[in-house]
Amino acid sequence: MKIGDHMMGRVRLQGSYQRTFSEPDGQKVLNHLMKVAHVTRPMFDKDDKVLAYRTGQRDLVLQILSFVHKDPGALIKEIEGTLIESET
Image 1 (cartoon, rainbow, N blue to C red):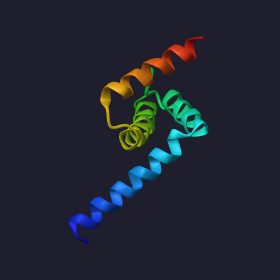
Image 2: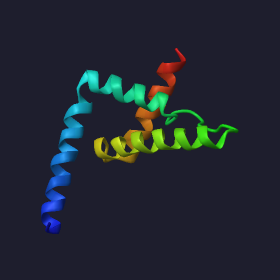
Image 3: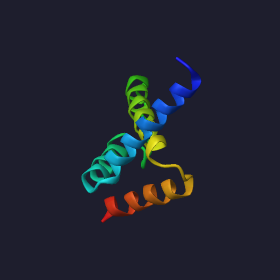
């Protein structure tokens, strides 16, 4: 596979992620994933296996976020907004 083909595939995949998670239902799902995967709260645990599991969950959601968002500042604001919404 050529590098150009690989990059085009990644661009198409990123577009799929953006379309999926830009819709209202996709935003609800993404907010839920950020909450349950400890993206918006501490993930520490005294049990190493639990910590490893949570790290895997968090890494997966962070990968999704990296496809959906280009601007780190916008991502930080969205995460902060999720924290505020979950407190109310």
